[in-house]
Image: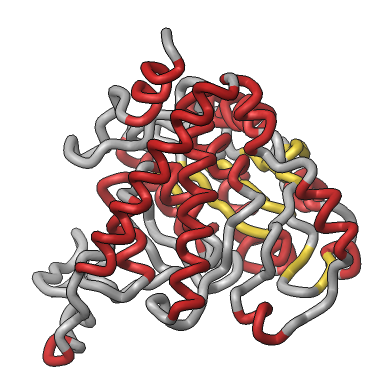
Length: 349
């Protein structure tokens, strides 16, 4: 296959249908497809940073640059019916699952063409058709939602797996430990993924977490391993093993992915000029950029063709977002209350 044909296959290959039979999850089965997604996430975040600077995106974002291998590696191990919960740094997770970058960018810009009509913004992207149960601005708060989804799957008798992404800062949150306990007690099909980038905002994890990340999960009897979170293929292999075990009824698993964010915790850091990491530390981690080995694995020609295709896709996403309308103020109270509520079986209406 030529480099151009390989790139085309990575750009628009056959994809697995999502649970509703409509939207399709991202295909990540080949090295070229995984490289394409790494490049898409990186380019999307770089584009979003520019739109924050220009004022199109208000309030800022939490960039995922540097951590792309975790999202791509884990999502490559998932089936079309599986579900995930994300974090305040969630753009990479939802893109790797298959969210349309046009609609995600419009969401960040607060436009009605966004995933959630511009009402969720950067930290609350969701797409139930893809099994994305929502990003979450509360540290660790996605874990119990993933556990609930896994319990529901068990009750329904299907083999769906739920994934909960969270950072090292969540390791000290009680709700995460409660989620570990329930998942372990009930042997639920949950994969807990800790993206340990070394810092909870500006606090070094080494000064905040007693013991180890894997030790927290192991204390509940949950199989736990540490993997190189800068290596897409290492993450994928570990995630595939854990997902297969969970799907077969083996219960929850825990992955600690040692990774690093190349940008600040939040774009506000640029204005505040915080200094809590040395230039040498950042440079050392940038030398381990996950895109480099992924590009080398498919060759320069194929990688270059994919880069060009992704650049064109992101240019279209920017045009879509900027052309999408801003919400009408008269509809500010829409979607605040549920319609058509009905009591659960056995409850009084």
